[in-house]
Length: 174
Image (cartoon, rainbow, N blue to C red; front, side, top):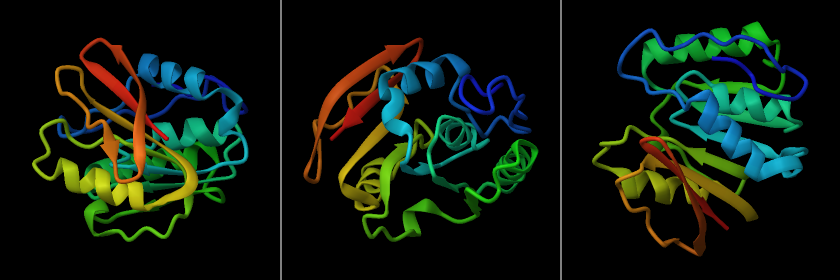
């Protein structure tokens, strides 16, 4: 795994030390950030179920002013913190070792990326919690199994695009 573009381009990232974590592939991250383009610059980003923190670090590399990563699996959180430290972004990227479902949102983030375990039973709850973290103009991106239909709406957000790549898909909400 590596940072694809921006200030940290080419920086190597540690992969997961466990099969319990399925990081967003370099290819899918590249697709995500190609779609978002320069709109990432100046944003506050939330990476829910952050795994290795690769999405948050990529956002920082491309100009996001800050990022928060939620990861409660101890081994994954250790890798995420190592990647944050290795890239020298600890002043702009914070790891929260806690259950994302227990987080409370107050419209703090411009961009929320949600990549829960594909078979998570509380998926709808996770998406509702994520939507609660968005600013009024914020965008939510949900990574899911390609074969799983994403909801058309999340609260007051509407799905505006779905991109498929391999076994995964990204659903974009505004």
